[in-house]
Length: 125
Ligand SMILES: [Zn+2]
Image (cartoon, rainbow, N blue to C red; front, top):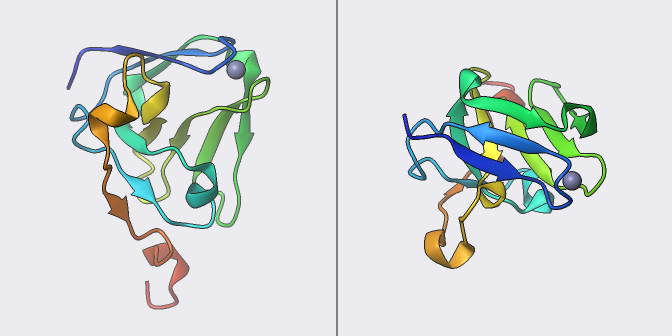
């Protein structure tokens, strides 16, 4: 695992300490109905790799469908911070661009995953 990285929302109410599973190698975009609107790519962290340093009371939760995925946002500025994954509930996805010092021009293009055809949405899955 990597060294902890600070992650902040835009207004500063929320601060996380994030220890990534495998650096930026796991960064992905998803094309599901939710993620494509949200826009931000996510990078993986184990469940014990995300600590809320500040602003736990400012975080708000959004879930839909199976409600397995739990998306946490800053209620003040609206920035997506992290989510518990449906594809792997044993890890978090963290907003790649909420991490301190990460700029799009340094990490793009981020690979895509096929969220539209998620196994949990198929009758044979
Ligand atoms: Zn905020």
